[in-house]
Length: 306
Image (cartoon, rainbow, N blue to C red; front, top):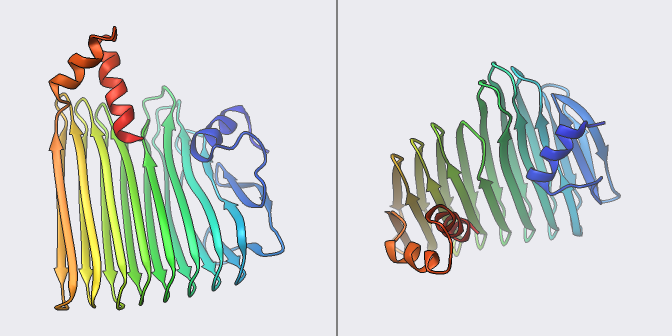
């Protein structure tokens, strides 16, 4: 069972207002708070380390898995390992994420490793949201690691979101793609206060006609710091694109480090990076409609991160 604070966190990170349909595994303060399996999706607790194995049968269609984690005890720190085994020709949605409520003086931290083994011609949409709240002086820390192994003809769309309340995060994502596999990553990030956020991506395009599109949109406010560090490696005739588009405000600091490495003459790789402030004409236009400068900035930021 989860309490009211944990329910609020679940709404923020997984849009859960009630028990989700389909398979799910809910973790609250390092304990299992609820689990359901289906005919096609099984969830098994690991015996050697904290975490779970999720087994999705070949050919599974239009099913979902929710595996949110919530922490509401100040000072709680945990590390979990979750493996996803997605069978051939499956088509599924996986919703993860972590929410931390910290009203105490001790740091709370959730670190996790998610490994995806995506079978031949399988299709996966993966949503991972991070959120923090609480008025304590203790920090809210999240360090997720994601490993993606994609077989021939598979595709994966990843939505990585963090827009509030996380004091420190290092998100590391690695991927290896076989022939004809396709990976799309859309990251949305906002930092404020003294927050720090680093996003690291390493994508290896190992098979002919493999493709990757990694795009980050971010806003840094106050004295916060962001680093976007992405490399796409073309080991075969392939297509890769990485992009960082950021708005900087106040006294923030943003570092973008897009990199490309081609090891095949037919690897087509592109990178783009842009960092800038909100344009004055945008603010002026909205303020003529009756908004204050602060309200106008908020509207622009929200639209940019949508």
